[in-house]
Length: 382
Image 1 (cartoon, rainbow, N blue to C red):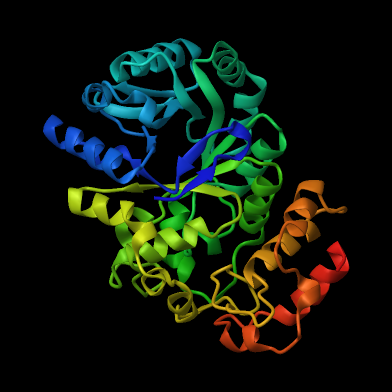
Image 2: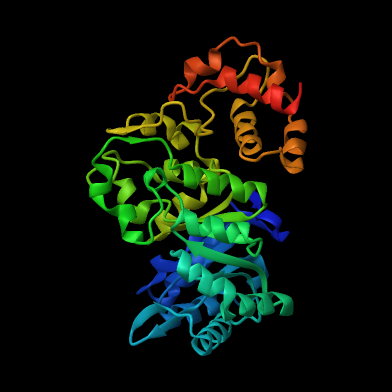
């Protein structure tokens, strides 16, 4: 298992974590087996979006004696009412539900307190200007949560929240189909098949901006819906008309700027083990680039996906890393110092490019890599 820094939180988290929805309706013995497998493979991140409080109690019992081995992402503003999992902004319900969650988990703190499901700018204003954010800040001050997070599917809302400087972590839906779609307050538009019938070109600019802003501001991204609810794994259900493997979906999400961990769902121990052994898989099994290039009606031409197909460079340049830092630098009026420092720490930089074109010959997306290397040398200095 590989680990990444969770933005500015001061926490390290496993690249692959667990989304708990697959535990619903399963016996408690299965929950214990899942946590055993997580510990065995070094998986540390667990997102607690899960409707049934009884499942949380079972999870709490499974965590006994090893709570410190895991980073819990618990949702604020969720309630279980009339047999349904609902979002709420009523503070009496918010407090009671979050306290109940801690009791059921058998802990007095969680690493991430995730303000739940903010998909409209009006709702973000309610959260930011009202009691919800103040409550989260109080929890952080008291040490009940270590970091403040927010979950969203809308890049406009997420970007507003990230730019507020109030967030440490963003839980966001990331996969190569959703990334094509413009911002919308109705989350169901992300899997509306009518939206994928036209000729789609490249990643939505607001989503790209969101990922780059998160990396620049050190807001760690944890990923949901990497498999698109499982649809992307089956050609007959995939919104792209082409099926991807779990490894390809995970690799795609982990290559986006700012991403620290993917909380992948699993409905069986076999699925969980496959997710957790991602780092051990051969590179060819993680290669999503050739699949993306074959998506019907979708063109990624000219857009660097940071997939690494450009390697190896005769000069030893990590072309994908240089391009990512170039894009981060160009996204602001002046280059952030942290971006400049990361560029300076590279073993080989854009100024060493021989302009031989071997990287462009290998690129599935016809990226102007030589031009990018020249621009990086000009922006950052040789």
